[in-house]
Length: 295
Image (cartoon, rainbow, N blue to C red; front, side):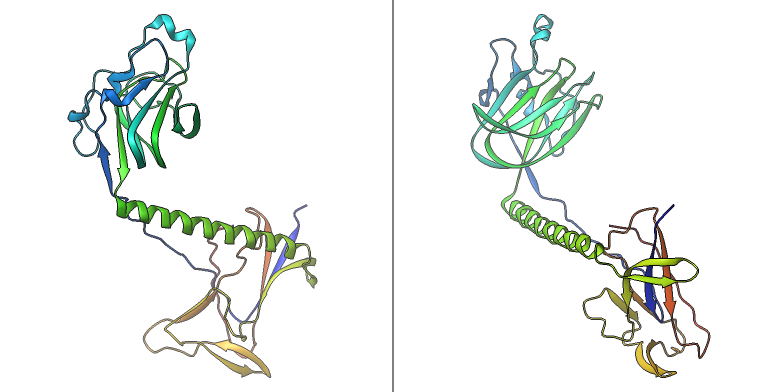
């Protein structure tokens, strides 16, 4: 049996707020690589073909490079094989592109220094005769590429770094994302604690329910996600000895006020909830409920 919860609201309720964000594409510049930058960690094979056609790459990676990581089939049972780039100085790397050729296998990209690596990205070589971008977002002088299996086949690579301005923007964006995630986790922890203390209410014909949220629309909306249109369209009046938020008619246009309900209340997708709306019965009323998803 599904557990049914109650959401009690007074007067009128609209559940609708969409917050959008526009993120500008980071500005990147390509680092021109040379075979002398590449060190092979194995005594066999030659990975220099990964960086020998850099002059053919103009703007976003294009073309179909021919040479790649040369490795005789007799060594295929010895995988994985690794090679690393020495960029000469620390770079704020944004992405690496692989010209994927055929077959499928895992590539691991690591940052750090020889003898001390940490994995920052992987690629499955699932494309075919196409350039594939792998995001990095790491600051390092050394970048290691590891072919895990013989099926990890690609020819040229292209490496990009952020411009100074774009790097600062990326760092600020990540800091903001971390702050927002910390706030979200704190709110969810608070919601879990609150859920354990929810009061029980009697609501016919459903019986005893736990009260998820109650909104008094006549009270100050500070601290709630609330909107109204036109601005200052709603006002609080006393109707039948009770305060209520009302919308006087607006000549020539529609009007509304809305509350978001259930935010960070641990509502379950597919769960069953009861929305109860109380309003003065001095005249006909209408409402709209919009489901915009759950946390």
